[in-house]
Length: 125
Image: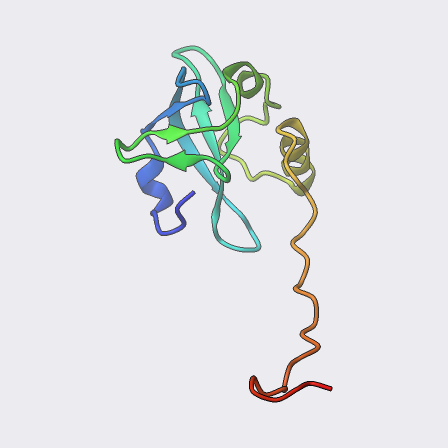
């Protein structure tokens, strides 16, 4: 998802699943404690329904202002329910990552550059 969007501007927008079926309206945005980036959205799935947590990455905010989530509506509605308005614990986030089949391993640092310091026009041998 675009990272230059103010998360407060997402609240109230409509959300759709991978097939274009409406899921509901974005109720709350949850920010990652470590990075400060928006990580999860709570989607109100109906008038008397609960909120379903969805990952903002790899979701996409499209030009018409709607959020498109690359998962089936049924999977989204079956997401663990932690209630809204509270902080998500690391264990709860892990449950959500597993529910959506998302990678939970931290990004690996790039391999060391063994050619660092060699000049472009010189033979490294």
